[in-house]
Image (cartoon, rainbow, N blue to C red):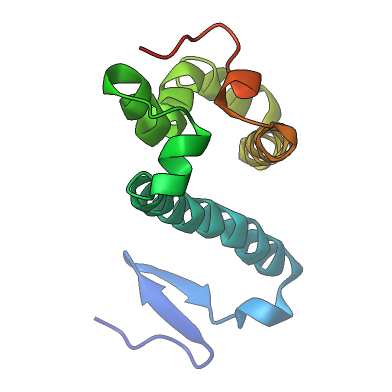
Length: 133
């Protein structure tokens, strides 16, 4: 096997130029976009552990009316339910608009959810059709 030319690397029998990511505008945009993907994953994990931790506080229990059973489970899994609901639509958005717009639309939906949760007074104002058990 031949050695690659100076300033290149070999992968799958092809030679590619060595490019530093911050010197290439396309790679810079890619890394910035991926930063939001990683941030979403991190906040998802943080949110799940935070909600589960808050459920053990008496103040939280009093504020939300001591939820039990399926309503309590809904608190912990609602982000996953949103992902499942979006699953049939996401491939079509990515095919029609591209991955970048798919990520942007997903981020905007998450920001809308943050705003709605932030302005809600309690659980009933977030989900008015659900009744505590």
